[in-house]
Length: 103
Length: 252
Image (cartoon, rainbow over the protein chains, first blue to last red):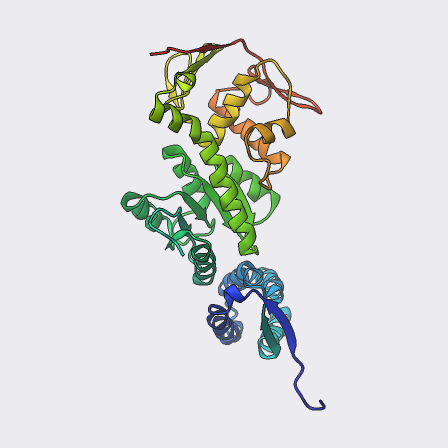
């Protein structure tokens, strides 16, 4: 339907249904924190957040979060502010568009 | 649902999202799970409770996980699986060299971690089984010692002695591997045979793990890795224990 926001559908194990909402809440907090850290050029803290996302995303069935985490960690190591900003936006957009189907 | 007799898994990780995920998954699959965020918590937990297996992150706030792994191996033969986002080959090799029984890089699927935990527990128990049998039933079959090149491996106590009668600590997997060599002296054993005999066939253990275990065992046997005298590499084939081995039934 025209005007309906684009959704990214992901299928996740029903065993994880109870813990997914808090995991996603934590990633939304990461978006806010990353945005703040970017203004302070705190690359070390951004590296830690990226590293953690890399480690957890796929385990929760959200491979895209691991991929964004890998890119965030690398960009933070390189202190590449120009690359970090779009990655944070990509994470925010992904969380907004995410449509989970539990199987 | 976990019962009091269920295997107790200790997760050492400072990331709450990992701890929630792993705890949840393992409890649903019948394990008891405890979580600690750092090395201090690990040692406290080991003082207070009986643990069957440790899942260890490498990047901890107070101590490097590799150092913890080495210290654990020096003081116990508790199985350790490293779960780390430091997933380069060199990290994996160092982790195994430090005495970990397995290494799973993050990101990971909890089902794969579960399979690896079950595999390591199976392997550990199959190593421990002869000892338990001997203790329970006083079986003469397992009340033996192997003598080789001046060394002695005492099976009931799983203790290795140097020719100078100094005790040498062996982990569960090192004991199992040495016993395989002692049961097949002067025969070339391929990596596949070593994997099969060590009952790890079902795990995702790869050939390189055997190489790492042989390397660790050589160090226990005080071998020079460049010119080993006891466990020799047979290029393109595997390894051979080059020694006369005597099995002694009554070693007490």
